[in-house]
Length: 150
Image 1: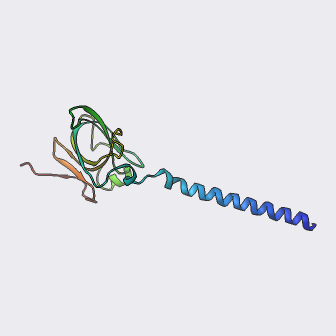
Image 2: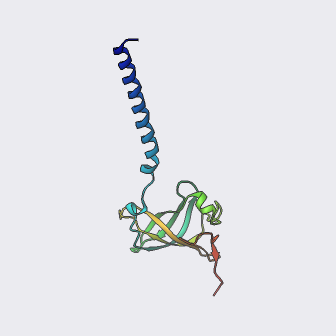
Image 3: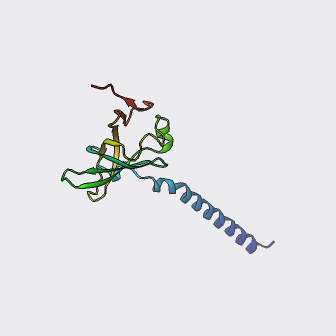
């Protein structure tokens, strides 16, 4: 094999290695870009209270969603989509796909969206009215709880 042919093969091999490395880095970075920071979407230092009827509970990954029809502070009916933890995280805390059902009356405490036109909120606490079951952020392993009747 002559010298020019050896250089061509070396350059081709280096180019292929660089391309493979770049593709690997892009693939590794994709989940980081797809997963958002709560602080980028929500005012995490603020809390709003929403009381209404569960329309749907989407128990899924990467985040579960509680869809609620409620009345906003101005008296208008408004659909809220409360972003919650992923299925595996909630499952570790005793939450399953049947924990919330369509028609349940709930009270939610959540961080509001930075965009006032966006009805997505970040769930921090939820209480189901009929049996006083509740979940609070940070109460790891609480499996939910039921308060005593007062």
